[in-house]
Every structure is written in C-alpha cells, then in structure tokens.
Length: 515
Image (cartoon, rainbow, N blue to C red; front, side):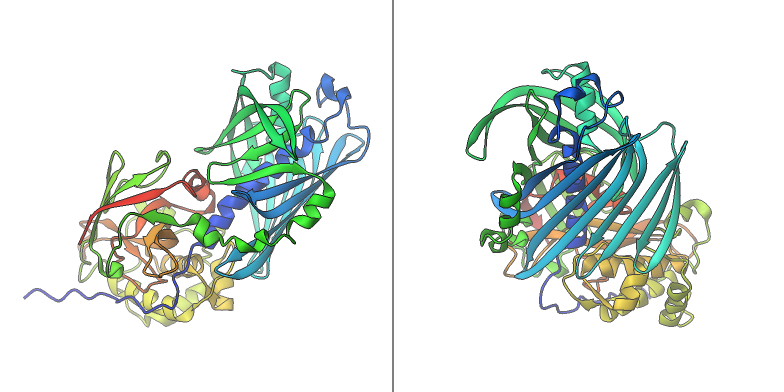
C-alpha cells in the first residue's frame, strides 16, 4: 500500500513579506558604487591632468548628491576627501529615508578609508545602521592579502582574501581617470579589478564611453559623455562632462543620483514626496492576470518580460526556461529520505557555515537538536525545522542583512530572516541547503502581482541514496514543498545576489497557465 504524502500547510498571514533585505542589499551595492564614483570627478582640479599617481589634491574638497527612485527623493550623499602625505583620506556618508508599507525607516551608511595615490586600497571601513541592523566591514591590505573583519549580528568574523593584483576600491572616479588617460571619447573601453566592500566581492568592472548628451541639471543644460559600466552581469550608466565632472548616474531599475548642493541635500528628505513613495508599489512585478489560491498551485507557465535574463538561475531542477517562457512543476515529496547527516561528500559546499548562516555556532547546533528531537529521516527533519522556524520568527518588516544567530536572538523578521535561520539549522544537522531569492505571487490586495521573496532549497534523495533532487522550502509561509508561484531567480549567498539589480523595477510577468 502506498503511504500517504504529508505536506506542511501554509499558515495564514496578515501581510506578505517582501524581501527587503535582498532589495536593500542590492540597492546598497549600487549606491555604494555610485557614491565612491564621485570621489575624483566632482572634486576635479586642473592640476590632476598629469594623473592621480603623480600629484595630490591641493586642499580639502567635498560634494553632495541626491538619490531618487524615479523622480522621488529618497536620500542624499555627502563626500569629503583630503590629501594626507602619501595617501588620500576619504569619508562618505549616505542617508536614505524609505517608506515601506507605510513605515518610515532611516538607513545610514558611513565609509572612511585611506587610499594610495594610485587609488588602490590601503585601509577601509564601512558601517551600515538602521533601527533593525548594524553591519560593518573593516579591510586592510598587506601586499597580496586583503584582511577583513566583519561585525554583524553581535559576531566578529575574520576573513582573508588572496590577491593576484592590487585592487581598486570600487571607485568610478579612478576608473574614469584611467579612461581619461587613454582618451575620454566615444568607443573608449577599460576593464579594471575592483573590491566591493558590502558583499566582499573581487571582480572586474568594464567601462565603455558612448555618445555625448545634453542633460538638464539644476535647471541648467550640461553636455556630458554617457558611459556604460558593467559589473557582475548588471549595467548602469553615468554622465561625465569634458572637464571630468560627474553630474548624473542612472540604473535601469529606476534609481538615480544627481549633483546638488548642500542646501538642497539637507532639504531633500523634508520634502513630502520623500515619504509619499512606497517602495512596495515601485518594485512590485506586475502580472497580467489574477492567480486564485496561489499557495496551492502546483504548476505554473509564464513569460518573463523586460530585462535580460542572463546570469540568473531560472533554468534547472523544477524550473524549465525556454526563451522567455518558464514552466514550474512541483512534485510531491518522497515519504522518506536518507538518514541525516547526508552521507556523501559531494554536497559539502552546501553544508558549510558562512557569514549569514552560522551553522557551526553552538547555539544553532543545540537548537536544531532540540527541534528535531532525535528524528533522523531527512524529510521529517525538514518538516520539523520548517514548522518551528515559521512559528518562532515573528513576522516583522525589518531592514537588515540578517544572520542566523541574530534572528535566533531577536525572534523577528521577514522572509530573509526566516530563510537564513532555517538554512543554518538544516546545515547544522547535515542537510545540504541553499538560500534562494526570487519572486512569489501575492494574495495581498496591496500587491497586484509578484514580489521579491526569499526561501530555501534542500537536497534530498530516496533512502537508498538515489533520485537526488533540490526541493523548495518556504519557512516564512510554512510550506514544504513550496507552491509553483515561487520563481527562483538566484541561489547562493549575499554576494551572488548582486545580479538581481538587472531585473528589479524592469520586469513583468505574463501568466499563461496555472493549475
């Protein structure tokens, strides 16, 4: 006789929880690149024509930029830079005021650093604070080693990165100076190694100078070169005048920065429109039809309209992508699986602790054992962890880059907080687990379509080790398996989520069929 398939049913929720941690992290990455970009050009001096490595800025300089979503002000940036002997000393402060479902949240980022005269990294510290979050990264370079000290969730985490060449702080000012040296003219191209401190990412940035355009900046017409900048699969644009001044930067998601003065910056967040814009409405992914009883859907066929889809994890496992058409099928769970821990070493990558999911922490290990009460079947263990995490973490709209220990202690959060805690618990017991970011259909009347969401995937096999597959788990909705309106866009850690900026604010879903 076939044994019944058990499923954890979704719990009733007052409101769906947007993955603000994901959006904020990718948005902050964009903003961080943006504000560093201004270090040279907005403080440009004629004597720098010889090159940054040969001269120094002659005095203290500063600049202000306003941040906008569409035409709505959401914050500002204040940069100061000063020569000190054989280095540049830089301070940068950003303030964002965000309306999230009617709740006003202030987010502050402060960065200070010491850069060599060629603008490669010498020392750097980044702090991000809100009412829900405190996160910092301190980096120092010693020859071919970049040493990092990360503080998050009450923990101090050390990390070491081996360098093949000295990296530049993701300073578009330096990149633009390099462009100027080889010719700031249409067709000029440049690639350079950079370090991005928020996600601790080392990679190449690719620049290309395009045509000259005329912009209106502060009621004045300004001629500037349009420059495309590609980093980790996403492209944004900036405008540089012939004199080397950056007057605007724009990301296709709708975020931009424009040169303003001090008085305008300080008045920016007092404007009523700064509070009128709910980022929820700005970032929802519209659907062309209503999906009834979305939490029970087992099959979805839809077309993804808008941005390029390269670099995403749309194809594989229970998702099949053909062109822009995506099919998702949710298969029933096996009644039983392998006994934990997973017996083969081929999934070691998904069992390791990381910056967010501290699966080796004694508190996490002990809590996982308490929850599962000696259960060893992987399917039953996942069900217990899903149910417990869903009930333990109080649904709360917070703006954080969460860690499992932080969530375990604070007992509140949205989808990212649920997911990171579940991932740490599952890994601590020997179940290969990965975090996922994507879209899910909302039953909330405030959201007309899909919204950004986070969940997890666990790797299960039959008891004999065969038929291995990744299965979705949503500890926020208390779903195992998930419903088919979960569209996986990317799996991995925080640094893997940068590519999502290429689709935020640009995507629409055409629902072809669902069951």
